[in-house]
Image (cartoon, rainbow, N blue to C red; front, side, top):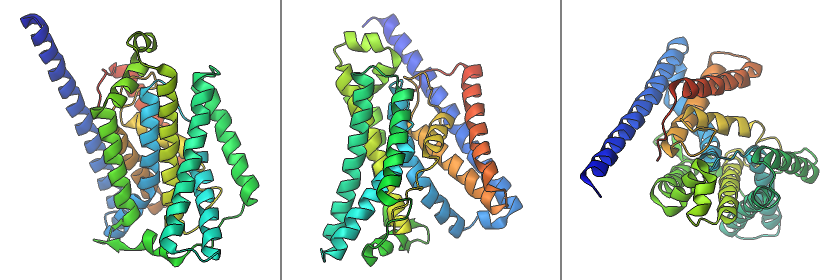
Length: 337
């Protein structure tokens, strides 16, 4: 490598690092200002109880947002994440109830129920990937169709009624806290997100994901099996959404057919607020995590100050519009990780 090209690469890395640091500072400043505002209006917002509730709301959103981050980085979109959350949570609840009624060991029962949820998410993700990769259906339409199919199947299976009846260990696992804030499922979510971050920013899988989103034809010329990689990305999104459904099941102690409603909006909001470009090839997992924290904190704050539920989704939609507008005005560079 020549001295000139080496210096150019070094300069590019410096600019990239500067852009990432500015974005991190901006997101942190927004979060701090938001906490200060809501705490001033209602001091209960700045308490351990409120923090615990925010983490409970944050966990399923950040799992869906993590899957959405992979998908958006590849140039796609996944509108089925909320429906997958609901369907997988119901599947988990049905398996656990059946095994519990049959007298199975609680640990085995929970493990098999979790496995069933993951399988459901993987299957839906596989179908999404096949529709996009081989049927050549655009991601918006393919995942929109799957969103409707998964939501409809959930209602058919449950009749619109929650599925309860698991062992008491489910409630203990989902409600027992340490340090007044964290539950075991919340800690598991942080570990999963750490793995997702490493996968996107430190592995070949992540580099290929960015390559597909940056330039589809160049990625193909580089020897990437595009169809196989797209399928893997959507399966990963489905599995992460299924884990979100499992988290909600542990939290509620039942599988609700309506628990994933609006999940697609929340996950896209988190990713876009965190800096993901809907054009693909741009964004970072850490930004999506901060975006999920900001959106869930905003919704929790609005509830505490008495804002009507109907206005909450309007606020989230406005956050998405502002974030996309800022990206367009700022001409956001291609920062990663």
